[in-house]
Image (tube, rainbow, N blue to C red):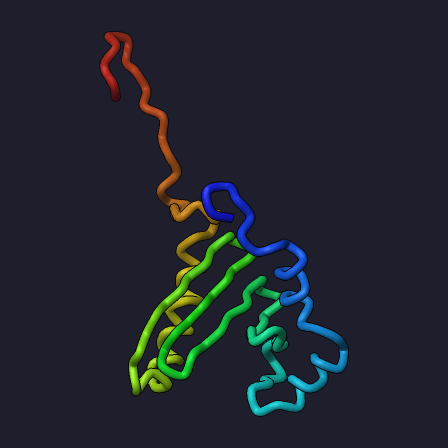
Length: 126
């Protein structure tokens, strides 16, 4: 959503997260990108990590669209880097790290919970 307005229909997101038909999932398992220890699929030009609630696109010149449905987070990177392929591992690692910086989905770490100020008997904030 943007300002409370749904931009992409929820059924589209659901379809992508399902990874397509059984045939689509099997085709991806036969591809060079398939890693047996990482549950993934490919649907509507998105790579899908259903267990993590993530789907993403990677462009040949470094463009990225990253959608994390668990944390309601979308990251878009525009790029025209001719050597972008060399950066993908680092960028994917950083995007994964970003998730760990948002444990409650608010953009605040668990250490930064708001503290209510206490007033002393004289009305001063402690």
